[in-house]
Image (tube, rainbow, N blue to C red):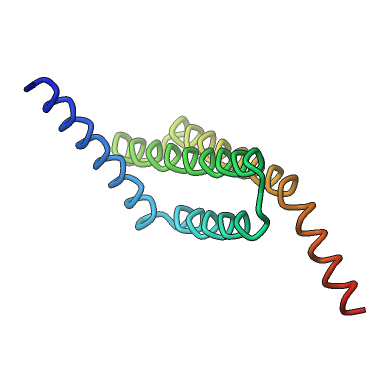
Length: 133
């Protein structure tokens, strides 16, 4: 029984640390807050567009990919700054590579967003314009 309780306690501690990391990302990083706002908008749009399960899964995966890339980028930057406070070309390159990974994930999410949300939004705009004109 002690082993089980210890296992559960350790999982709870790990979960709490992970949540603290997400809160830290939202509190301290401008891009974290922008991703948070974008995530809320995308989820609201997903509800309004009544996405299929597959479409919703694609949107969730794309959103998670962006969050993961941003969190890893921030973690790498903070570690690099702690280990090498002065400018170093390799540290700069590592930061640029991590930022590039974030950019790739964001671009992929935008493409998925256009493919998923494009058709229902075009239909909506067409319907509105048809009624107005």
